[in-house]
Image 1 (cartoon, rainbow, N blue to C red):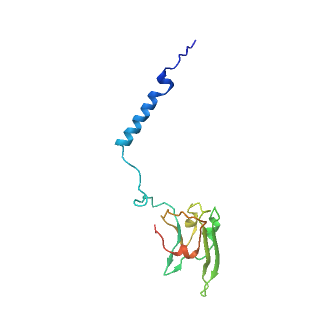
Image 2 (spheres, one colour):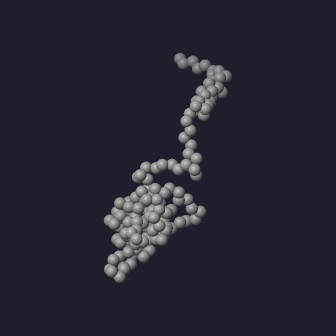
Image 3 (cartoon, rainbow, N blue to C red):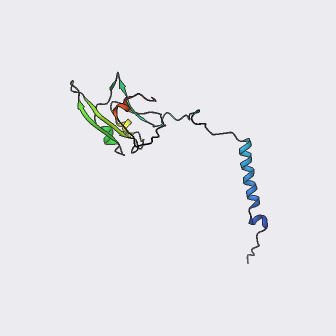
Length: 147
């Protein structure tokens, strides 16, 4: 038969366990190295594979996009909307190119599907807004944070 003994005063109030935890905390506080990044002054370094804000590559102010509709087709979040038009030399181009940043899951499938390598994901991670933001063609054409 198993006999249970009543726990003592130290065991009932977990005094030993609390002191062990405080010892670990104090050791890390006084002798541990700091890992805090002072954000506005210091920036975190991310991998080259990081996928941030979108941009459209352009050459001399003309976008590389030919409005082939592969990026909106492959997008799982359906956040890319393109309206195509034709230039006088019979080349297609996007009249309207919009990306809904709140719907986007930053998967990078649009970047991989583009045959002209026109749409890219930069390494910019500061995208907080106070209102719903839909990036239009003019905004996306500004060259931002190339990889």
